[in-house]
Length: 424
Ligand SMILES: *[C@@H]1O[C@H](CO)[C@@H](O)[C@H](O)[C@H]1NC(C)=O
Ligand SMILES: *[C@@H]1O[C@H](CO)[C@@H](O)[C@H](O)[C@H]1NC(C)=O
Image 1 (cartoon, rainbow, N blue to C red):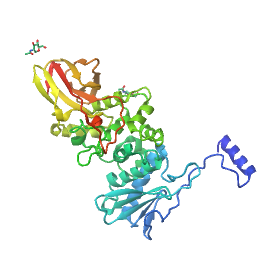
Image 2 (image 1 turned 60 degrees about the vertical axis):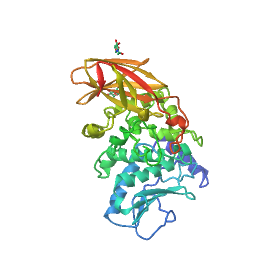
Image 3 (image 1 turned 30 degrees about the horizontal axis):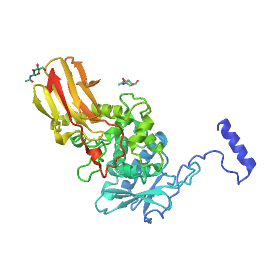
């Protein structure tokens, strides 16, 4: 017990039993369960912070181990507000604390899992179709929604709506693959899992709005590698790092209905969102996110991805295809074929953009050359290849991914001239 804690204990004694707590109490090792959240039931299995209803078997145990791993990583290691604390609790420190109820159900129309919130208790609860009870992309994803709900600020804000899915998939993928959760996985006997990255969508449709919630064609389930970029911060941009997603929630302006990109700008301080988004897309040229299994996925899939973003207009000039113009914070990734060791690009565009020559050599090693005032040049060493990346990075706008405005969907029209290279 530290010196100040001794003092607090002594003051509390002097004040008698009615004294207000002077310091936050540590949460109990095990939270009480509340069967009134959801359906309740007589068959269940408990862990310290969760109760699985509907079964009391090995699969329930496995699910609980996964959930406790995610809890340990996100709450204990990364500092997210505990899911034991009510959404309605304004003081946090002294609880009350409650387990998250997870219902294993035989059928769940139209979904493998769903998160509910109980308004009275301010608690998230989950339903998971029983076949997916131990699938991290479902059970940890749904718990990710629960964590999101318990952080409070991105709730009931229309413009954060689609970002729920982006966050939950980032949450599940980071749980399974990131070193950030390795200690939690090891402590619970959970092996690292496979990457959930969907390059066909994230690269093949990179021109879309960075988080697009359009039914049928949107990318909101697949856009999370952007969050991995913010978290892993391979460019060491000031203001970014392992806490960025949590800070994008804690520093969201309450009830402002701002977009998470506005909050990101507050978190990143002097690093502009345009710079961040531009460099994220540049790194997606070779899926170079300090995330080795995602890079491996790219190595095996690169030949089948859609990179047909521009048309040749003759004499080394190219223009973006009208249907592939990068929309708000989206980009085009344009692999080049060098014809000389010296390459140069000059760009003309209809609006603000961030463009980069991404240069790669198997190994992998990468380097990035910014396009400045419409031009960039590079000298390629033996074995190096280059890709031009053009991102549409205007000033921040308010946009609802579920209902994209014309402004958000308007693509960047641009053309460029290459010397020493052609479009591959
Ligand atoms: C970022 O910092 C790490 C650790 O200091 C270093 O290894 C890495 O090369 C840096 N990356 C860049 C792009 O500067
Ligand atoms: C092609 O480009 C070269 C170098 O920029 C220029 O000298 C030449 O006139 C151009 N030819 C045509 C047909 O535009």
